[in-house]
Length: 503
Image 1 (cartoon, rainbow, N blue to C red):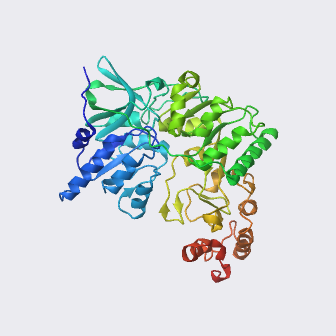
Image 2: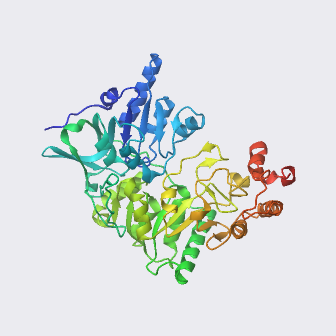
Image 3: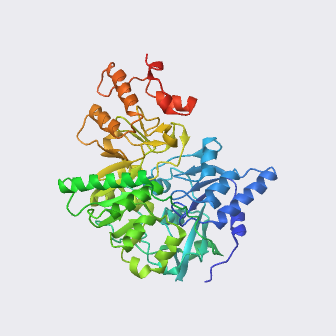
C-alpha cells in the first residue's frame, strides 16, 4: 500500500468550519507548518465570501507563526489550548477575539481522552519518516513529542502527515512513545531515571487512517536566544551557589538532582551558567524543553543524559544533534508531554525545577502568566507540573523589568499561578530568598532582601502599613496593588506614594 501524496492546500480543503485539529509539536519544534498556513488562507477566502470558518486547535504547547500566528491573524481560531508564545496570537487573545484556555501541559492528553474538550476531527503530524508494516503505519516524529500519540488515536476523520525532509531520518529512535492508560486502569510509569525508555520509537496507527502525506522541506520556526548578560549570569551563579550549599549541608543527595528548566533566554542562560560552575557535579536533565545551552553541556560531558518533550533549540543546534546522533542516541530521549511532565515521574526521580516568574509577591506567590493581572503573556505551560512535584522548586527572575520601571517583587501578585505552598526559593541577581521552614512574615523579609534596592524601602513601608491590620499574612488591601496601579497610570512603579492608598 502506497500512502496517498497530497498538497498542503488539498489537506486544508478537508478541514471544515467548526472542526477540531490536533497537532504534533511542542513549542514550534515539531509542529506542522504547511497545512496550518493553508488553513489560514482558506479561512481568509471563506470570510471574504461571507461564510463562517473557525476551528479549534489542540497542540502539545505553542506552535510557530505558520500555525498560531497565521491562524490567529486570519481569525480562524474558535478555541485554543494550551500554552502559546506567539505574539500575534497573544494580541488576539488579549483583545478577546478567540477563546483561549490555559492548562497545565501534563493534563491535556488525559482531558482529550476523557472527552472534556470535545472531539478531535483531524490529526496533523510532522514526521521525519513513515513506514508501512503490514496493516500498520509507523510514524517517526521530528523534534518534539507533544500530544501526538493521543491525537493520532482519537482523530475521527484520519491523520494527515507532513513528511518534512528538513528533519533527518537519522533521528529515528530518538523518541520514546508511551501513552498513559485511561482511568481507572492506569499502571505505574516505570521510569526511575532520566534515560529510561518504556515505549516505542514511533507512533503506530492503522495504515488506512493515513488520509494523505505532504512532502515538504521546511525549517523549524526556531527562536534565537539572547546572550547571557550580567543579570542572568549573576542569577545563574546564585542558583549554583544555592544548590552547592544544599549539597554540602546534605539537604540534597550527594548524587545531585535531575534538573528541569523552563523555556526562554533567561532559563537557557541560567542552565548554561550552572553547567559552567566547576563545583556543580555532572548532572542529568528531566524537563519539558531542551534548549541550546544544555545540548552544549551534553557534548562537554557536563550533562550525562537528558529527557525532554521538545528540542526547543536553534536550527543550527538541531542540525548538530542530527549530525551527531551516534553520540546522542543513548543520552537523549524525547517523550510525549504527559510523560515529560508527569507528576508521578517528577516526584519519583528527584527533580530540581528552575522556572521563570513574571512577578513574586512578598509572601512567595508567583505570577508566571499575566502582565498586571490581565494581559496573557504565554500561559502556565508545565511550570506547575514541575513546581508542585519537585524535590526542590526554584523560581528565578531579574529584580526589575522595563529599565527598572517594574519591580518583580511586589506586595501582592496581580495574578497567582503558583501558591507559596510549593515554592522553596526565589532567586534574583541580588541573592536567594530561601522560603523553606519560614512563616509568611519571615518569607516577606527574605523576599524583600532580593528585591531591587530602589524598591526595598517601599516594600518595607507596605509591610509597616499592613502590620496595623494584623493577621497571619498581613495586607493593606487598599494598597496591595498600589505599585501596579501607579505603573498603569504613570509608567513607573517607583513613583508610587503608598500614602495615597492607605485607608
